[in-house]
Image (cartoon, rainbow, N blue to C red):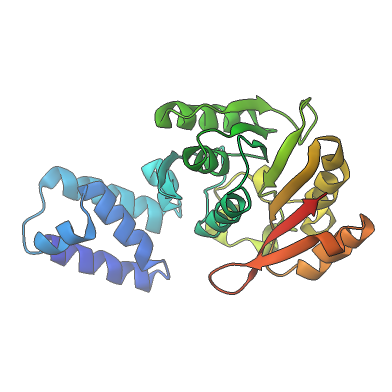
Length: 276
């Protein structure tokens, strides 16, 4: 069988199963160790049997077992770096790259900023910031010891020096920082998550009480004790709860010190708060 025949067949099967064609492309290219250009060049070449078997195993795990592509591969890409992922951590989303982009923009004129990533999971945000701000002093915390293990493994692989610790938000934090970043859990319940997400990704990284708003209130309550002045907070927010977030900000008198930035789909995505 040629690459063309198998690739087109698997894409058709994905459509029939109401799965994402893009996921099939990722599995196909990563398993064959091809770029898309390589695939085109080799379109009519026969697939080696070992590659065929591996593609089919991974395709079955995605289509039949409903496992996310990133967990099948054991890694994903985030802001230009390769991140190991497993079922102990949330899969980093492309939209979270906007949080990194905004943080880097805010820090252009800062020298050696001290940054803390709250609820770091795989470490994606902290790692991307450290990769692009080598002089930054970065701490990353998570309530899950398994998540911290994964984040530490990623830092070792990428040769990035970050301080990791197990902490329920700020519970084990003793320092102050110039910047607090976080993509906290913000789904109100399983009804807000598609099956691929709710059946695979860790609930502790997905769901939050109080209609998904609990961690925003908690972070804003505790942040002043851990934030230098002037300081910044950057949070990813649910696109459909901007009004609720603004109501929380009003409780802290922060509505005039805050802006909400949009993502590439023009959806509310990043909350930036400037303390001065």
